[in-house]
Amino acid sequence: MQFSEWEPIYYQILSDMSYDRIDDEASARLLSVLMLNANLVSDKEIESIIKGEVTVFGDADSLKASLVSFKPSGTLIAAGSATSTVIDAGIIPDIVVTDLDGDVEAQKKASQKGALTLIHAHGDNFELIMIHAKDFKGKVMLTTQSTPDLVIRNFGGFTDGDRAVCLARHFGAKRIKLVGFDYDNPSFKDTSNRDVKKKKLIWAKRIIEDLNVPGVEIIKI
Image 1 (tube, rainbow, N blue to C red):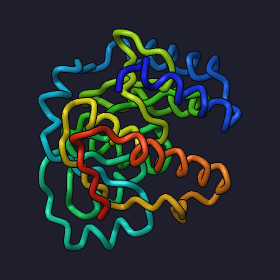
Image 2 (image 1 turned 180 degrees about the vertical axis):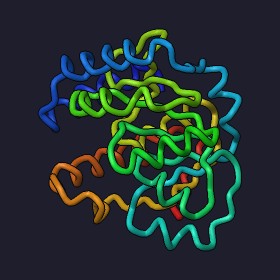
Image 3 (image 1 turned 60 degrees about the horizontal axis):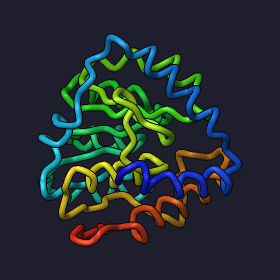
């Protein structure tokens, strides 16, 4: 998704969630400065990882059970807090998409084991960026939900899960399997701000399903 396509959706999200674009952009500037000497990768390197088939792991309560019989195939992308469950199942994702909440230590572990990490800046994770961002020693890409530039990228998306899907679509995935996605029930791990989480899941569903593009098959497992 190009930013010109994403920006009108972004404005709707800002209005619906009562967020401020100024905060998002301040957080993105902080991330850019802190990660100046990080192992930043280009769009071309992401493109070399994304295959025709992609699996995105979400953090629904069903994820652990789903992984019992899961057979990895294609490019594996873990969305944020799903990373710890995926690693516990013996799977190292190719890519982790995170705004640095949840079990961040598992996300750092995935980075150490070779996962490429997309670290996302938004107005609510300023402190988390300060605490965690520089601990990611593997390959990273920096992302924002506001205006991108040559360092901070934006391929569309709002939550970790739907940003992972937008990433896969942007780089040419034809089939995206969703494992551990439940738009109606926030994970039991997230006990705070459940009403906010529910609103975010409504947006995630819209971005993944309603805004899907021709030629991309979405399979929810």
